[in-house]
Image 1: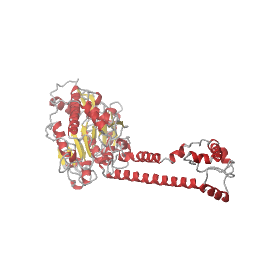
Image 2: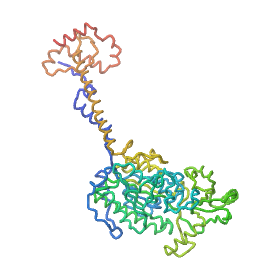
Image 3: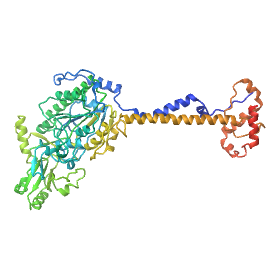
Image 4: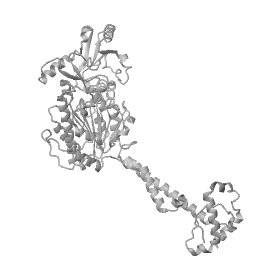
Length: 591
């Protein structure tokens, strides 16, 4: 009668080749999955969008294009990114009206509660910051209206000098094309895109560019952009597209007006049209979308107006910029007079005055180290305006046929970027962006290194920080989905397989050597020797009967070894066989 042998789980695993193989596959998959997982818009996500897309109003959105379906084969070999800006779309406008299409992209992709913008919180400065990754003091577009002491003149926004402040200012659409290898950019009405940059304005314009023209319908703009990215000769891989609303209507009627709500709905419908067209051409899962805005809005009344000229004699300075931030170029010898009068008045009125040195100390403004920032900067408190806004009121009432009234509401932006009403929104969707992810707020200049990473571009020096936005994309450390990522993943697969294979061979060799080197029982029936190989195999009942006398002793020893390991260790030294005994045991086993 033979005694049952104890079972050890680790022994079974190491002696089971199938288990070894399964372990190999699991470990390899675990370590290499991040390198091969390049997107989140799988079929389930795409179907989820399709099921919720619904029907788009044909009366508002009529396609002007005859683009045939399935244009996926025409895309650039580089990742494709479409950046869309809705001017003045405040971060909380999603709660103002039904925005089902924007909500779908937001919920299924990546978003933030709000995005931080640059001071001054106006259109031209922030669109330039998004495109270059630079603070306003660095790219030089410090306001929508500005004076440049170098040229001793106010610069119109349609001039090259307004946008091309220095040779270091290079927007992303130019940087993308300079990288070569077939990369092409297209820009649809984005502020500053129709001007060359670089030394003596020597850098070329983007391959596709349309100047701002508000008469062009939204759908026409979308169709043109889709033609650019699916061009069978030179498809673009980077697009910047601009929509001027709801900014103008928020200025004219106030951000809380029904007119602004209507514009929000119209922009949401345009988004739905874009998604529908992308899906019809089999591009939705291959094109990356970033939809954002440049600033928020604050409602104001004509009665909340501050008259600077009543505080300081206007003959002592020249005023530039516009509500709610104006800059004063003080005439020689009058700085102290102008500054002190404004400083005293600011103690009781709703504005703050800064010298150029003082404004440099305001956190997160980065608004001093530029010749276009003048001697004195006056900033209105939230909800207040300066007297220059009176002309804007006349324009809005006339342009929109409004009856002038002290009860009319208007909208203003440009206040401190630390104020919540000034914050814009951000959302991203596509194969390279995370799925159902809400990130903490970040600065719009952080988009520059993010876009460079997505497109596989070398990152230029900027004020943006990739660490702030790296979690938006699916994989980090290199351009996601690039050949480098696949090469690293493949290398790890083979490396892990080779390593585990070597370990398996060494373990198998060691077990075979131990099996032949030591017997699993003691000749004298005593406590015997310490066993290294605990698995003695007796494959037939006859063999078990032939060694029945000895197996009983062996089983007893094995039980002691497993159940009382600590006690066994105390006798480890005395249980080691001598050289002669060891050789005798080997001979016995061979017999």
